[in-house]
Length: 551
Image (tube, rainbow, N blue to C red; front, top):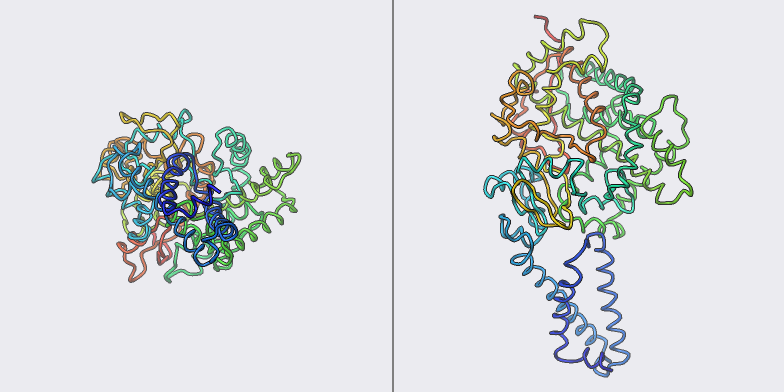
């Protein structure tokens, strides 16, 4: 009876508002709630329905259903007003990050960095760079987020000794958990040991014939389109996806062979674009995936991935691929759970994604600079040509060319594959980064684009100068910040494979062909149209390849 009296009381709206405040201070202010968004929405509306039903059944003044609906809806609105008012006041003035500088609106909601992505058309990395120039090395990018451009943060956040863990963004694929998404350090370490075998020196030697095969296929495609504009952005994507598809699913996507975009690549590019827009509002992902029709493409995509994994599990390849090692570990697990299988499927997806997007964008930006800066191409050829004159060229030979690696490094520096950095979470007790104490449970980003173009770290930072990695080391003031593949326990496990691909394609093309920007190609537009969809995505780049003129 007391509850009915309270429910019908004129003060019920005030109590609902106060309940919202209490819910924030005692519940929502603690822990992570992103993945619970669908459950919270369902609980809210279920409670509303229960109150309407209860009130109309037992409260005399609620006998009219429309009145009950209006009254309970009012209570719900008051609860939400109380909750969000408390959240906004706390974040604006009392939050543990309040002393850090940044735009006022960034204090209130992750909608702020999301709006920057929309406003800049996925140039968040440039927006973040501008914020650091305005506010300094520590910028409050969201209510619980800091972007940190202090060079000392690279080691503090990424080293083997760091107390940081992966942030809530890595929950985004759940219930699937790929290696990259494993947030538990011990679990990640155990799973990484299997991957280490798949990317060890012996395994890389086994994979090299595949890299050679697809490099040869790419050269054949260039020869077929010689003297005509060729969209190398697409073709470098075809190449990298074909290599990684072979290593993950035991078969190529045949894009280099056919010159046609595969469903997997198109769908992945769409997913990465959406990730770029919504990576700061993680709670939207589980909501979208739980809504029929809106989740159609998500289900279709994973149905395709799962079917490829099923086919690959039935294969017995002549030579091991990356998936072989993951499958071997999966087969040892007893009992085999549904979660184990989903993790295996997620890992297969990760093989392709992690090894394709980053490699293709680096190749595209590298050849953009070679095409627009002939002196860089000439200097590279002086180092590469002798390799071909000495006999058979392989990965060992290419790896000895310091200048080839310098050109690759410079492309990675100016156009890092993950320009805005990855998400990390400080330990509950907080930590020191440089001379600054960062409170516990703070989401931190190290913006690679900003760091790699910072005059404190690199002189003449906007210029493409490969020699800064060789004969002009004075131009690399603090090369320790240059970690395009990250480092430490979460470093990119496929780094050496990626370098093998980059070296092969770059060396073979520059030795065989001359190339220039196609007529009408605007260099400024190319750089302006790059996008940050978590990984860097390049717009179409049209080059014209011709037979190389002998000196």
